[in-house]
Length: 531
Image 1 (tube, rainbow, N blue to C red):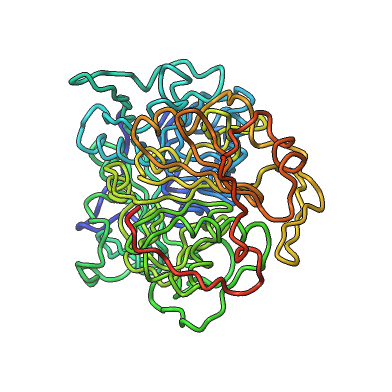
Image 2 (cartoon, rainbow, N blue to C red):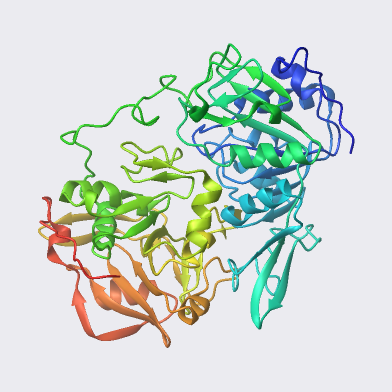
């Protein structure tokens, strides 16, 4: 597809309105969109202009969308405004749930829909930049992206096989086809008159450079939204993350904010300010904190870990309360290293971060087995230790980095509640009281689709635990073993009857540590032993 681009004059990058910029997007273009949840690095002005143009003119039509990281607010923002029939015909996303209007089109079989693991997807964009045909990886073996299962296809109208099973030197790999984008929506804070861009007010970098390189090297148009422009060659070279020759169009939005709503820039999450150690950031004693506390018991001094979004994300705050947060390093797949993990839709907007890597490099580290431990939230678990998060209750959520992270981490800690749907508990007198049981059982006999394979984890010698507010399980060759229960709960009534299968009950079944159930610091010290 040959694209028309605006010309530079005397080397200056064209500066257009968002409405003018989206006029350069033709029918059937492949649009790659940078951004993460909560407005992180989201080129909102460009997305809005494209959505509005289609509403008014019904052009452009039949776009293919690539979104490596889930952007949005789990409602109507992110790429949800692009969920208009006729505008989008095809989508490949790392995560879907942050922009549920797009997910709904996929659920209704109105678009072709694929899900690559987030890390693999960003690596395929890097491959596309190098004109490589795809990525060869053992990430995803035994999960729904494996072509022996669903092959990453999310609905019935998605037919083309993008993932193949190959064998090299008697080892199985998945070959993920790289899709070359030809339009990019990216964002930075500042650029000079030639398009050289810096990210000083941003929370992270994500894969902005990779996306820009992929689109540029495939003859496409890189559209970049910024908050301000400065004179040519006045940005410090070490602050520049996007070289100007990659940028074709700049859209200036003086009202651009770091995240959705609030102040334009929070200097703590941009890394400019450091939160004082005495600042109180504590969780109330509830089931969420209980799970995070028990999960912390699986950490060791000197370990490098990952923490995922959801109930698992409280572990950093609990470690801070216990005074051991500096004894290990938690990372987030989008790039942050260290610091205090944020919660909610803007997950990854950390404070007191020690370093920020580009997302693609972070996943390289994960894929190579660099993680000692990971903490991930689960939606469902089956009797084989398989975990499902990408699709449940008929809703498409996507994997995010879940498959990338859980495939090679030496210790894998899944966190969640035993049941879901209006579960209410309280912790009093050192016991867990179930006030209202959840309507939905999360421990089921068989998962229809697999996001984490217990079988593959055991073959790789990984240590797998499942921590809930009332029970702790571990995965062994013969299945799930129940190893701990909470004080105050009945084994049969509150645990076994709330599961669709019978776990193996440990002969050494223990009560969960009583310190977990006290509304005071636990006095917990991290062990020195290696994981």
